[in-house]
Image (cartoon, rainbow, N blue to C red):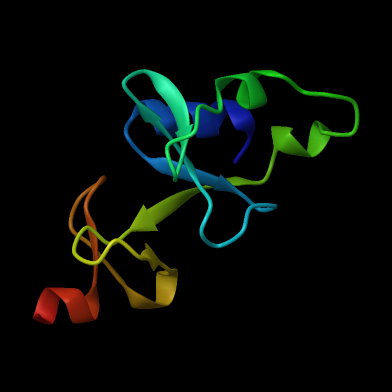
Length: 94
């Protein structure tokens, strides 16, 4: 998705990542501020596109994090409970 769609997804409560991020990195909105997975403010980074950073405009996607174990969920091992809550199959079996 493009950057505008990614921002809308964050406004709806989703975590988002860019294709250039590592598997551990994502952005989300906390108390109205765009924040990284480890709590750093990314507002300036998000709003500023420097020369050579045009790739930030596309290739965004929604990240799903298991609410049971906190690890990232990939399409092959997910169960979707609703728009914002996801859990691994093995976490749900407990």
